[in-house]
Image (cartoon, rainbow, N blue to C red; front, side):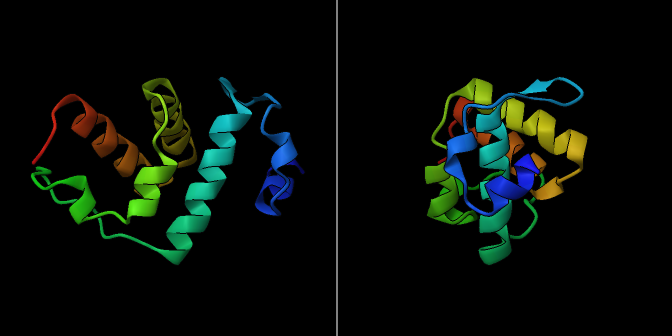
Length: 105
């Protein structure tokens, strides 16, 4: 019910904690759902390996704006994406963490 309410746009649920396998913040779930909505509208191709291009070349700027969050939340999103087997989000968070550590120009 909570995920459905978030999918329907109820942003008042952002401060609710949801006990999944590990405690996942509602902020994480909110971004998770928002990513899924955006990805359905603006999909991107799987990332090349090894990743050697600026992230802005392969991902819509809206994703980068959405994920202008702290590293802990990006990590939490990657764990959630791995647990839920959402490969585009898992790849994106992995590349995002990589490019934050090693800027690619």
